[in-house]
Length: 448
Image 1 (cartoon, one colour):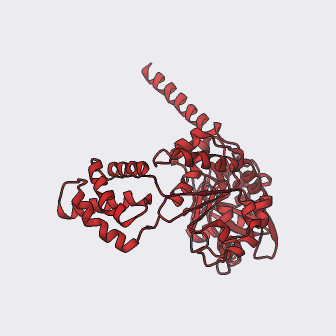
Image 2: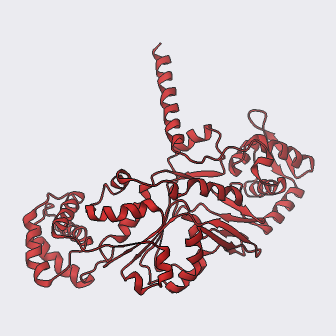
Image 3: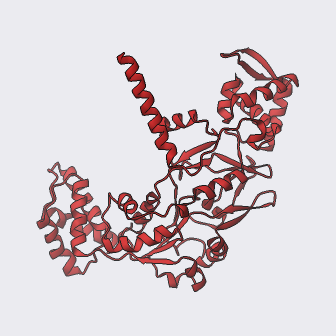
């Protein structure tokens, strides 16, 4: 009796979690039920099978299907046809009426030919048309975050109410913004939190295909996959395994940004392409950090993005010469230490409607930041130590209250205490020790 109750509770818990996961979705890729529904040709899938077996030697039909992320029932007929044409051979039996397959000499020749044409081995691609539909269904502009969403996203940092009043409408619009002001005041930190305002996770394909060209979209450097437990539940809901569920992405690029990274980049050796940065940031945020100090001139970015910013559509060129139309659906944020009007002209500024100055902290906020930093590094907050710091260092030297200072100075005091085996304490004399070297090295504007 108790075992039945436990099982029932587990079923209820599982179905409740699954319902919670799916309830927030505007888009979920359904598992294809036939070869036609994959949007791919049998020849392309056979090529993936041949390259997989060339790399692995032999494997069961179900393991092959798992590797290329297609249902076994779709591959079963293809595998039988490949065996009939003497590309594959059975080398053993597997569970559930399956077989272990290996390449014949003719199959290895086919596999090498496929590898020469394109070295990609992995999940089967998704047609670009399906990717476009997924972006339109999951765009940040459909989210319209409210005050409570911003409060949750920024809950671990201190943001004054005036800044919330400025940020809120900008984020809600999904139209893009400039964050400008002196270095060290948290522009990058703010920008990274903004993506969390939209909350919802999204689906993206691992790879897409157009005009026979494989384009890798999923990038572990920018895309955070959801927990494996949730993924396992979602697989039972007959989702297309070629897609992966991720947190809304925040793609951050700084001085390394070049015009080349804004295009589909083709590798002539592997014959595989890499998606442009703005594709990887679709349905999330694209942060151009330290704007104006890239190797590319601001006016070049202006010319490259003025149409996408206006029409929310970008045009990219494949290695075949074909142009493809891709949604430009992200909240684009420019973070800069310079005045926006000194970087770009009026036409560009008009397409980035929100310009928000991130100013130095007020003294009450500065004290609050010290209190938060003390807690995060394991100190008991001592206001007298901070008052000493302000009275003997900040005011005499007219050092501005940059928001990074509390974190950096408390961290240096912590390092000083650990090195000397002292208890972690915020003592005035400890700040005297670390403050000179800190400001001598970084000046009044520390890096963010």
